[in-house]
Length: 461
Ligand SMILES: *Cc1c(COP(=O)(O)O)cnc(C)c1O
Image (tube, rainbow, N blue to C red; front, side, top):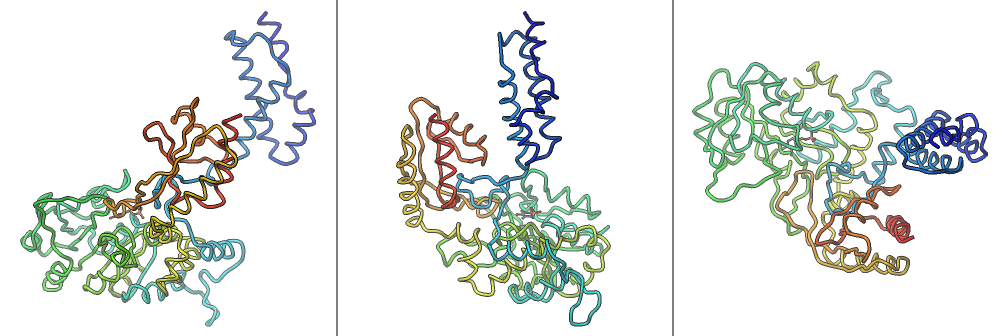
């Protein structure tokens, strides 16, 4: 029996002659088609050997191969629909670029450009020149440089200012961010010696002062962006630390994490330190991410006193950490919006989504639900109130009131709905709560609703 079935397995060469397969070869890569056919035949062979099938047609193998090919044709890194409501979702690509930023990046990426060319002088220029002035204008700093990400920014600062020297940090600020970025480890790697002062909950100015000696390189303040401690706590304010640094002639560096450039308290959010504030307080160096609250591409921005930035520009490490033209173009496009705060809030998706009101979310949820109900019949859709998160380790305690759509089906569990939507051609990522699949409309785009409808209808059939 087995042998007979095995003999029935089609050969790759035969399948390659099929019109359906010929058509695929025309529109995609032949190597992917052959791979898919081979995997499909292998799958059937295994099923026969394990007595899992009694019979099959050559067409079944073909269809199975087409299924494999459909997945192989998709890019590995691709669009997903974020139905989690977490705006800066680190797993889902953090900040989305504004359309201006995208346009700028696309043009620069696909055409020659003046990346390192000074047009006025007709000679070699610096890639950092395109955004330094803009950053200075927005933050009020004396100088700026941009590297690959904030982790790289901190590395560069430590390598330039405190190599083989001591860096004083409060014990309450030895943070870990997103799994792999840990302040103590970064410090060790950079060749600086970490001097932990104070305790987890309380650090005083004298803790810094008592540990300063002739080998102190910098005083470092790390913004504990992804957690909050409450109760009997004490942190040294930035202005006090700056004063101490000035007296002892030691640079004060602040890793502010999220690059907040807009005062969010105006919009009813808890206070988050802005870069402008820190510069006003006289800090020597501030580092922050480009793709968190700033809403731009992945980048690490370093602003501060000219003499220190100058030293960083000359550091050989900068060459290894330098950012690409696409990033620069995206960053310039993003930063330009900040020349007018209203423009930034309107056009930068991250800001726009964080600041969208509960009422707007209610309207959006009603609209979405109507569309869903009009096309998908076996599911139930209810609107509920809930909270969205900022994400990206920013504003960890901020709960943003939102509206969600709760999806339910009598014969499909919420876990199954979640899995099916996640494995959809355009993956739809949401969460399960109380045996309902929750779609937070805050992070879902108008045009995505058609894909969600399509995926649910497919599940119905
Ligand atoms: C996010 C964060 C970092 C790391 O920034 P990346 O841009 O992800 O490298 C470092 N420090 C703080 C305080 C952060 O919040």
